[in-house]
Every structure is written in C-alpha cells, then in structure tokens.
Amino acid sequence: MRIAVGNFWRWDGKVDRGAYALVGIVAFAIKAGVDRLVVSNFRPGVDPASVGFLFNYWAPLGVDATLTHLSTSNGKFLALMVVVAAPFMWLGVTMTVQRLRDAGKPIWLACLFLVPMLNLLLFAVLVALPSREIAADREGSPWPGPRALGRVMPRAQGTSAVMAIVFAAAIGLSCMLGWEAYRGSYGWSLFLALPFCLGLFSVLVFSFHQWRSLNDCVFVAVVPVVILGIGLVAIAVEGAICIVMAAPVGLGMAAFGGSLGYVIQKRHWETAGSPTMLSVVVLLVPVLFGVERAQHARPELYEVRSAVDIHAPPAVVWSHVVNFAEIPPPTEALFRAGIAYPIRAQISGTGPGAIRRCVFSTGPFVEPIEVWDEPRLLKFGVTENPAPLHELTPYGHIEPRHLHGYFVSEQGQFLLTELPGGRTRLEGTTWYRDAIWPAGYWRLWSDYIIHRIHMRVLEHIRREVETVR
Image 1 (tube, rainbow, N blue to C red):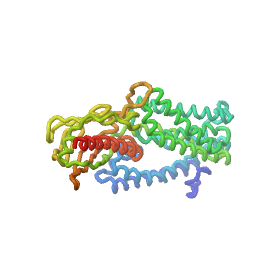
Image 2 (cartoon, rainbow, N blue to C red):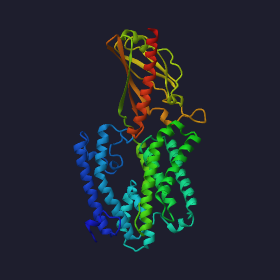
Image 3 (spheres, helix red, strand yellow):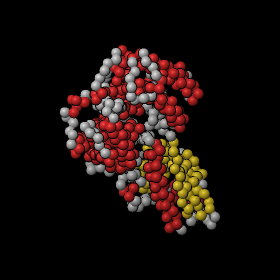
C-alpha cells in the first residue's frame, strides 16, 4: 500500500487499492462528521442524527426544498454545504482517476463517482480490482472505447462540426422532451446545467480526432443551443418569448461549457495520456432533473413598487383607482409580443370583502379587498392568477408548463399620498413569487414586466383624472 498525501489532489499518477480504500473510508467518515457539525450549527431544529445517511448528500435540504425554490436561509445553508463538499469531491474524483489508471480501467469511468448509489458500487469494485498496466493512449482518451468510436467519428473539421452539433442538439431535445413528460421544475438543470453540458459535449465530439481552436469550439458549443431553441418553438413545446428571455443564460452557459471543452481537448492533445473527466457533467443532467423534481418548497416573495404624480387631490383619484375604464390597446412592443397586460378593473361591493377584478389580456386577477382606507389605501389579496403571457408561436396557442403556477401574484395595493398644491402621488405595489430558477436572473425580467404593467395602469389613471378635471 502506497500513500503520499501530496498526490491525493493530482490527476496524474496511480494509487493501489489498499491506499484507495483507506483514503475513501477516512474521507467519508470526516465528511459525515463535518456535515453533522454544519447541520448542528446552521439548521436549528434539525437533529443531525436523523439526517438520511445517503440521501442527505443528494437532497441536503430535505424533501421540502430545491434549487428551484430556495428560501434565503436554505440558500445560505446550501452554499455552505457546497463549500464544505468541494474539497471532498475533488479528492474523491482525483483518487478514483488514479485508482482506475492503476487498475487498467478507462479513466472516463470516474464520472460514476458523482452518480448516486453507483458511486458506492464503483468504490467497492475498485477496492477489489488488482493493479494492472494499460496503454497510455487508452487510459488518457476522453471517450470509452476510442478505437471503436474512431471508426465512426469523422476527421474532417466541417463534418465533425456538423456531427457534434447534431448530436448535442438531439441530446438537448431528448432532455427537454423527457422533462416535459416527467413534468419537472424550471430550475438549475434546465437553464444552466443543460446548455453547459451541451456546449461541453459538442466540443468533445468535435475534437475527437484532433485539436480545435477556441473560436471553433465556442461556435460548435453555441449552435446546438440555438437549434434547440428553434426546435422547441417548432414542435410547440415552448413559445418564442420565453426562448428569447432564456437565451442570454443558455447561450452564455453553452459558451462556458465550450470553453471548458476547449481547455480539456487542448490538454489531451498536447499532453498524451493526460486524464480527462469529459462525461461527468453530461451524466449529471438527468440526476439534477430527478433531484429537483422531488422537491416542492415555497419560493421567495418579491415586491415591485411604481408611482406617478397626479394633478388632483386623493379624493378625486380614489374612484379611478377602485374602478378604471378600459385602457386603449397597448403600443409597447413588450405587450404586443404577448406579455399579459391590464385592460380594465371592476369591483363588486365596497369596503373589506369587496371583490375587485382586474381584467388582463389573458384573463382576470380576482382580488378580494383586505384594506379599504378611503382615500388613502386600497389593499387586496389575489386568489386567481391568469396566464402571464400568450406565447408567441406559429401554432396559434400552446400551453407550456411555466404558464401555470410558476409566476404567482399574491397581494397588491394602491397607496395615495397627498402632495402640496392639491396633487397626489399614486403608488402601486405588487408582491409576487416566481418559481423559475436562477431566481436572480428571472427576477430581472419579472420586476421589469410588473413595473411596465404598473405604469400602464397608473398612467391611464393619471390621464383619466386630469382629463376630467
């Protein structure tokens, strides 16, 4: 048994089965102890001893949380868990690479280290396998069975680029259709991991036989994501509006994956026999879809405020806030493209308990009045939400999953503040939840859209009031 601590973190070298077993068992015991310490200090109310022994590593927040729906406290806890896990994950992967090389097995099998349950089987098998020599050109190859694959992989740059793009786009479409059938969540896997993996995968196919330039790799990485977006619109899975909104994230992650693929293939071709981990991220995509699908926590509540000043006292403005006449058709490109926009408001009754209906282009918001403080504050809940948009599609009408239950308005209010000179500041506020991750990115869109909706109503009220006066 040979153990050299300095070699634990390296991709090159070999480690025999005795050292691999010892390091694995000790590292697992240390990691379990650290996890319990973290849970004890950062998850009050959770008994560390009750945390699932194996499942905890794949659902550290329990069965009621996911990356798609993270509270602030869960987000901080998960970030800490990632930081704690990173060195152990690196150690496990590098040691597995060295053990595979020592056992004469393909390096690509190290990707199984990150797959639940299979990693335990892999560990047991590698502990049992004796040392064996294997040719350097085979142990360092990015792909399993390189000789067999080499017969079907084209060598010409143009042909290999086409094959890479077609393969990656087909994988992306299969994942999306699988998600649609499985009814998963709009989360990390869909918007970040999938385009990243497609970019990486396409470059690995593209560079199978020879080194490729950075520009060519990034191009080959991005094109499959573009084709995937067009394909989703073409087969009525998604609408053009949502594809356009998701494009900056998707294309950016694809370019990132392609850049990583460039670095990996460059190292492979410049240093014969250098180990590579090219299948890991691709295999993680279905795992992430499954983990996210199993979770159902409540997303964070956001707030958007908008205001206008009106040349009229609050008593005059109030009646136009409670009921406003039909707003002329929109001229803004945002609403003309299909985003839901307000048309008119109607109310049944007065005071708390009255029902206000704000009719949008996709249907009415039903808003029971909670506070009726005339002429200062009108506050209401929301019991029914229409679809947030009409998808722009060549098929007339489609119903993607995100149209229902992902964007939810929960509460709203109009605040009227008296200003000098008989004027009124009218402020509209909406509180909403958006269950599409990454939340920071999608909140930019949601906040902007809600602000434009506010301004459409507020400007209409201002025009009505000042025209009457």
